[in-house]
Length: 82
Image (cartoon, rainbow, N blue to C red; front, side):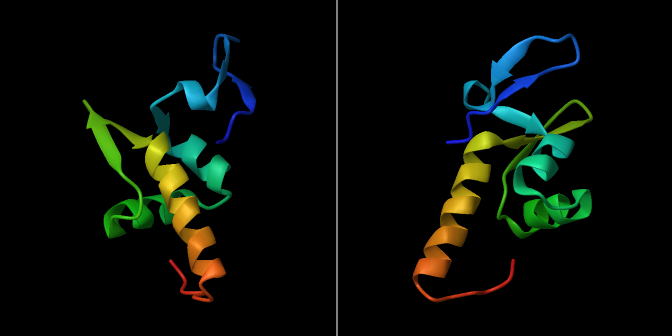
């Protein structure tokens, strides 16, 4: 589980595992991919996003699940691009 300590805008430190949702820029950073790639993964159903008002948030669980699937694909010998 991704547990690196992070600080939010007001300097409050937290661990990602304590959160249920992250903003798209945070998902970008966690996965080391572009913003548009995050949205493509959401559209493809590889990541789960929810909207709170006009704000889009990605579930932390879907980030873990996505990486787990990638690792399993590698272990199984399937290098299919997502």
